[in-house]
Image (cartoon, rainbow, N blue to C red; front, side):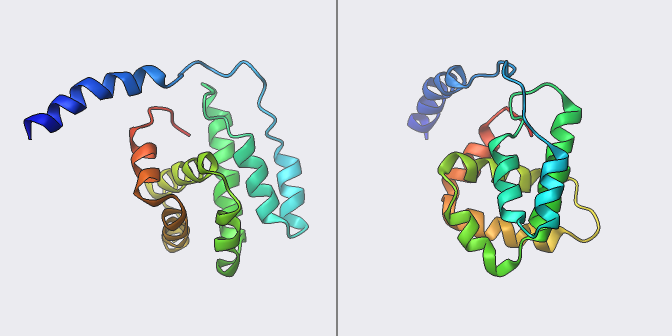
Length: 144
């Protein structure tokens, strides 16, 4: 047990040093109208990928983070259960972790009975990202 704590105390500060918490300097290209247009065209998976690619993870603008969260929740609800596996399989590891962050934020703000939908997504994302994804999401100080 002592070895475990020794490792935690020596490795943990190094992990924290590697995480960049600087605010993004490039403008976020999160276009709500474009995402809504994709939803109306039945291209929710493309819309979800677009929001994940332009997620304001390092932004300090809470309104922008809230907009991204609302769009993600709407898009998750639009994608059929049968298509979730295919979509999650197309994501790289970083996007899987980011999607997991939004799922956990959804659990924090569960509304209108969307918990079942979030649990379905969590199961599929966990199958792709394994426990490592959950650990990375829980230990990352950046919030969505």
